[in-house]
Image 1 (tube, rainbow, N blue to C red):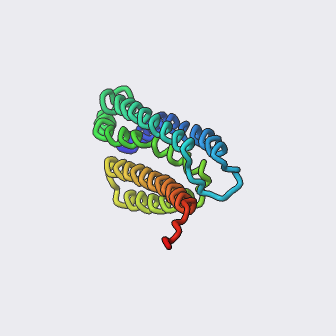
Image 2: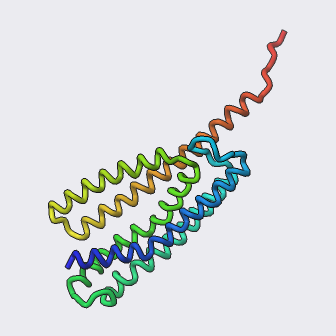
Length: 203
């Protein structure tokens, strides 16, 4: 019955997940336009640091992702958490859905923000670091789920691990975008120091 419950939860995730994925496409469309207005020719290697216009786009997307995340989390909780009988007539499946509804809700809460930050990294042409993140995450998660399968882990344990994966993704993307933003601030500070007139020694 846990397999049936897991399949239903996966279907719910794929039902609501694309709403957040659309934000990634939005960021990839509008951030390069903002960067072009800030002097980016689109030919330099990444990562391209974000200027004021690009930052405004990213902030707007993150704000939208928070709102969409709350909506997705609420909607994805209603069916398995409040009305699981609408998804299955089996009592064991219904109980498993109700018990694990908070996990899928929390996983979807941050999914839109992850998608926005992923789109930001792609718009910055920070593909090497992004691909490294995904390679490492894939290796770790395959190993983790293989171990869980060998140990006959419970549905709750499996979805807790998936929630941890979402948290890890968000942390990686957020820290990387923040790091590239600090790079721009440091460059601007160095440029301003260079432009300051040198003081002549007093005679």
